[in-house]
Image 1: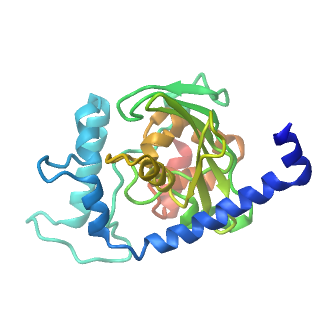
Image 2 (image 1 turned 180 degrees about the horizontal axis):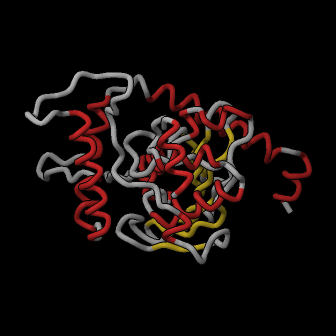
Length: 275
């Protein structure tokens, strides 16, 4: 009855806007904090720190290992010549290559096009059960959808857009948390809510930010990866995003996914379309 009254008075919408504004202010304040202080909170001097890359390499399949090694070879060839000397930077030289190729949805999932969701995953990359409920939609607003804020960061495993309305559920320490991507006008906002206690909501400008705040509130000295918890490190999720882009006719966005975010010349575009 209380929830119905809140909706009737429009208080729930006002609270959501207030959460988004507070999350933006909190993110700006965090940028001025001492980075070394954050490392101290989450690291133990007696134990060597295991990076996310090392954990992924331990759990990757032979196919994923081959793709990663091929991507690393491309990166080395682009940065260094035959004598091992670094090449001079130019406008056409790529200085960053992401770890994994975006899945070719038609080749890898030929019988499932347009039939994704909901689906559940439980692999070492998701660090526990994750269920994708809604894949979401491409952000509206013309060229705004190609703004860097609406795409995954350079350190992420895949290059992909953040679809507004994306919704997933994550089991963490025996509790179910709802993860969502909402439109924050100038950027997507990532929201994590305790499913059994809707008042416990955390919002941030990256997938990791709300989870970081959640861990702080619980006083847990552990490290997490927001993209992994959201399910963005899984090829199944990437395929679902690819299906959504195909369904929406977003060929240019798909090309950007396949090219790992780099501009493609006319020859590369024609070759990609043929494939």
